Image 1 (tube, rainbow, N blue to C red):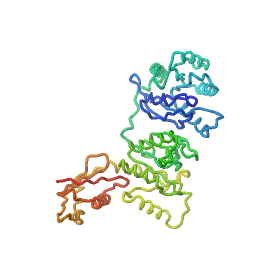
Image 2: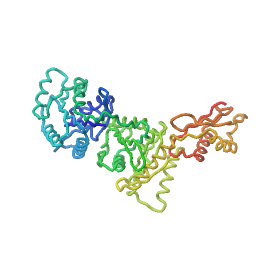
Image 3: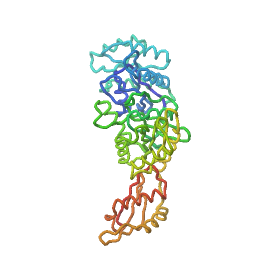
Image 4: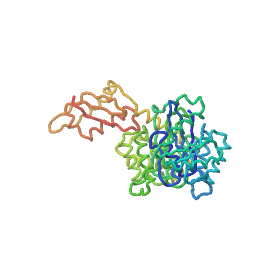
Amino acid sequence: MALVAIVGRPNVGKSTLFNRLVGMRQAIVDETAGVTRDRHYGKCEWCGREFSVVDTGGYTSNSDDVFEDAIRRQVGIAIEEADVVLFMVEAATGITDYDSEIADLLRRSKKPVVLCVNKVDSGEKMYDAYDFYALGLGEVWSISAANGSGTGDLLDEILKVLPEDSQALDEDHADIPHIAIVGRPNVGKSSLTNALLGEERNIVTPVAGTTRDSISTYYNKFGHEFMIVDTAGMRKRGKVTEDLEFYSVLRAMKTIEHSDVCILMIDATTGMEAQDMNIFNVIQKNRKGCVIVVNKWDLFEKGVNTLRDYEEALKTRLAPFNDIPVIFTSVLNKQRILDVLDAAARVASNMSRKISTSVLNDAMLPEIENYPPPAWKGKYIKIKYVTQLPTRTPQFAFFCNLPQWVKDPYKRFLENKLREHFDFCGCPIQVYTRAK
């Protein structure tokens, strides 16, 4: 699919236009300059044609932003892979040094460029847009990304310069597993994404909170096909003071809701902290598959059976849902990162596992006969048969004469027996009792 890259200096409205083109609030928008850092992809459809759009960070030089070099690299990659570059400037400020620098960069790239002047929301500002002909990039298109005026004509122009073979629609990735990488700030989520992809897809720095948006990437290597979603680090609610971080955490929570499997990354040196448990509880509450990755294992002091003891302590903390794969990695040294993929693929497969009623009853009824539910007020509970419900996650219904008297401890016993007989590692299981 053809790709259109939106580039420009900070705070000209690139993310606002990106959200309008893809038809949803996918990128965080704020009055603060420099909100967007990583490349952000989405799909746009106009007049029956579909193309990809990439939002980039604001291009600057010699500024105080510690992310300046990383953002410039991300913009350079976006321009290199784009078929058309949408260069965005702002009417009120006129041509700045940054605008001239970006124009020179685009001329050297030899890519088709569409120049649009944003924030032209009145007739008077239309005259300010004519100044930008001085950049020598051809026709100037006046728009207001906030209210949508002029965007139709802009899209018509983009379709004119798009390659003709771009009309073939890209394959939809809705049917493949969505893997979300979640955790506290600075545990190595973006580093893991970059290591798996083998490229600098997301910006990585020692500064906590570098990633702000949830960044989706298609992954198809080593026999695995996923959508990998890198998320912003989630801190305790009381420590979130900035609006930007609040929106980042909100995006991360939504990513968990829309994913199939969550990779929960924790720092080996600090262990499973209260905030890690909060994130794990969110994953469990949303009935998502889970893989725990203990990163920075190379920094942890090791003795005899350190790994085994650490894993046992971790699973004790996670009880009763402790049937979860735990992978010890060092993303920096690329140790066991493929094991993370294998574990995620296994959990994704387990999430969609369907067991026939006959096989289920052959395994479970003898277990129930050996250890029947305890009697309640002199009444004996008899479980007749069990079946798997037609749901997205593993859920089972046990039919019996007195379902209201089957208590939670016995339901946990049934869940453990299901896990013994069938591979549901990393998956939450729901057990229901129903009247026969």
